[in-house]
Structure formats: C-alpha cells, structure tokens
Length: 597
Image (cartoon, rainbow, N blue to C red; front, side, top):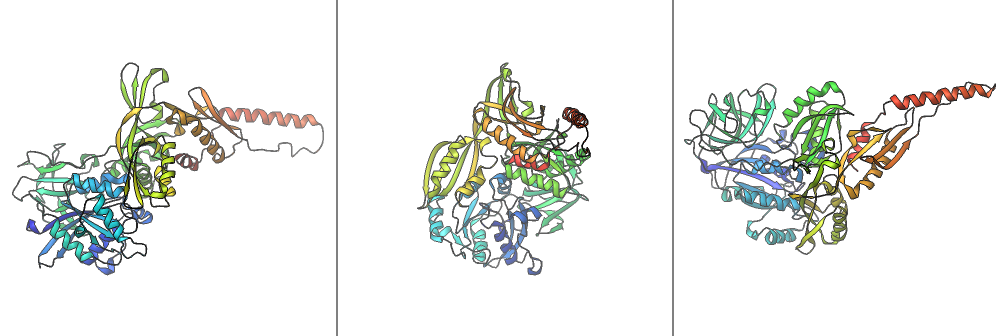
C-alpha cells in the first residue's frame, strides 16, 4: 500500500478521561466492527480491565477509512492505559507511532497524567491532536478546559477538537484531523528489514506471538529473521494484523503494524524494544527502543500450596511477555517456603499482577509487605541494593543507607491545597514550587521518599480532593536516610513475611499499628500468642491473643478439690508444651490488611 495513505497513531489521556470509549467509537464509525458484535471497552479484552474500568494493556488495531478526499486510508490505532503505574505501556506504544490524540475530560480538565503523557509524546517527536471529550455532560466546562490547553500545553484554539465519544460527536472531525496533521510513516520496502517489537503474548498452539511496528523492509512468511540484541535466528511461520480480531496476511510492509509467529516456545527469548532484521541482509543498527522503566516497588509472592511453585514460575514467565516491567527472581522464606521476589512500578501494578496470576493461571497466592529498593554502603566500601528486608546487613556493617526520592506532581482544586500540603509533609515531603492552572486549579510539586507514596498516597489525594486531584511522579535520585528493619515476632519466632524496611522515626508508630492489627486478625489458638514488633533486639510494641478457653473440670460433679487441681495442672502443662511446638495459624486477610498499613 502507498505509504502516504498510512497513519499510525495512539490515544493518550489521564485515567478515566474516555480513551477506550473513543477507540470503540472510531472502530464503529469506520466499520471495523459491526454493530451486532460491538460491546463497550472492545479493546479491553481482560475481565479485569472491564471490572475496574481501566485499560491495563496497550491494544493495536487496523482501521480502513475513506476520507473526504475520496482516498482510502489505513489507520493503525494503539489504545493505551492512563494510570501512573502503566506509563511503560504508554511509552512503548508511542515508540511505534507518528502521532497521538491527547484526550481531556471536559468536566475534569487537565490532570497530572495528561501533562506527563503530553511530554512523553513530545520526547518521541509525535504530532499531537488535542481532543476535549465528554462535552455532552451537564457539568462540562469546555471554555475552561480550552483555556487550560492553550495556557499550559501551548495549543491554539483552532487545534482543539470538541467531541463526545459516548454520543458519537466529533468522530469524523477527529479522523480527518488524523489524516491532515499526523505524517505518514517514513521508510521503504526495499531497505534492510527493521521492525520494532512493542509487545508479545503466548499462544498455546503457535508459541510466542510477536507484535511489531515495521519501519523498513518487508516481513514475509518463510523469511529467516534474527533479533538484533540476542542474535537468535528464527523462520517466520505466520504474519498477521489485528482488525480487531487476528487476520492472517502474506506480508507486513514498512510503516505497517501487525504480528508474526516463528515457533518461539521460550518467552525469555523475546525482549520488548528489540529490533527484528533479516538474516541475509541485516540492518546496520537497531531502532531506538522505547524507554524501559525500572521497577520501583518489590514484594514476595508465594504459592499457598507448595506444589504450585513450578506452575507459578511458568505463569510469571508468560506474564513477563506482555508486561516487560514486571521482574522476578526465586527466593525462600521461613514462613512460606519457596517463592519469588517480584518488582513492580507501583501498588496498582502489583495488585493487577496478583489478580492476573490468580485468575488467568488458577493460582492461590500469598503476598508480603511491599518495599522499595534501598542502596546500602557497607563499612568495607562495598555498595549493595536491598529490596528484601532479609538481605539487610547487620547495623555494625552499615556505613550509610540511601533511599529513592521522587518528584511528585499534584494537580488539585485550589481549596484542597492545605490538606494536601499537610499530607505531603507528614510523608516527609519537601515543598518545591506551585503554579496556578487557570482560576480554580493548582499544580504543587514536592520532593519526597518513594517509600512514603507507594501504598496509599494516591488514594489519600483522591479522598482529600473528592476525586478531583491527580498525581504523577518521576524518579529523582537517592538520598541518605535513617533506615531500620522492623520485625514481627510471634511467640518469639520471627515471621519474615511481615518484616519491612522503614525510616527510624516512623518505626514506633508502624510497629504499634502492625501488632494491634494482627491481634484483631489472628484467630485465638489453644495457646496464648504473643505478638511483638522489634528493631534488632529491642521490642517497641507488643500485644497478646488470649488462648481459647476450655472448661476441663466441667465433668467433675462435686468431690475433692484435688481432682480439679490435677486437671488444671495437666491443662497448664499441655498449653505450655503447645506454646513451644504449636504453629500460629495466620489467615490470608492478615497479610492483605498489613499491606494497607
């Protein structure tokens, strides 16, 4: 097909601003999907995405559109997530495009992730089309949002398209703007093959399906190709496109988006961001891959049933295929046995991975308290990274400890500034600057430790601003900290699943909260359970769970008191022995509740 008739574009926005609905409407309008087969959130093919109303995975689809100039255009659309935890999905989608639709909610206005995604698109040199969505809402403030787009992101009023994806308003105007503003792809079919891998998935029958954007050359069935990073060679068995269901074709030309299979059975062989080239006529250099983001939050994931360890390993390997920011390595725990230490981009990302593992692979899992990565400088000048509390060296070996700091961008209504600043300072935040966005919104920038925001900071911002606040953050640097390891002891035995690394000034409060929560959640046993929070050998908080009472003298009807005393002594000895050898049963709810503290 003529390259001048191809457009590759993405849809970017803050969470819940209407990306998926707009993608649905574009597919319906162009006839890519029939009305009778249509369902809401069509490109969100996971049950989890539908239930939560968020996009987790980027999706690619080919659209055929006859424009007002009577030319038939081929549009490749890539729908992307909006939550801060899935910015890697946005990044890899943008690397495969020449332009993007920036969608803004007419009632909410510009949010933190809107600004972050805008600058991410600018970094990739994309042409950006601003769209104000949901103009049909009763509380839509179109003029205010227009003003924000012009003042903050420097658009002109003529650039902005007014639309309602739900009502089908402005859809034709968006399609025409895509054709007039977004440039056609560069590259040539006769050049040496260069295709960017932007995603992949595992198919039981076909092996790994590799999603690519072809920049140069042609990908054909039967061709021999190689991956430029690993130098591994394969023979292509099938080439296809998404419309939105998979459709097999003979070849994928330059500028087009599709997939290929090559009987690749090991998921580890595919690296997202790698370049595919021809074996006989290889390209001289790799394409610039998307910016891979390193995991920032780590926790342990263990199978409840030890027999499921191998199944869990296989499931994680398949999951990393289309979630390249999720990393894992084997580890063992005194409490749970064999499992994995896993890395995530944030707490929502962690929850999504856990739910996907449990649902898609039918696993029952335990999760430990999340931690960030700390840098420890030992007295012998050796530097190590610690994400697992069990790997923290003894105090006498540590010279310095450093923790990651982030730059947090909070956009909120003006009246919420006081509670937000109070919350940020409680979390050891350092105020940097503020900027007014129009008459009623303000952007506040704080520098703060990553460990203080990973659990519930985003939720707190939403609560304080009645849902109108938003958060985005970027990694800043590592800074010195007073780091201690907080342990939980049950009857004097360490329960490493509850251990965490924490700032010294917050250890006392967290210790008290942990032991009091565990006292509520651990069921009463046949023996007394002592719950203690300790830093090293110093106990900083303690609670007790009373033993289950049993009236052993109920069967005695009168008679000598010595008989009752003998039974009480026997019971006392039995409970003492149980306390030495008995295992404290900890329910799954206890681990989940501790995550929220």
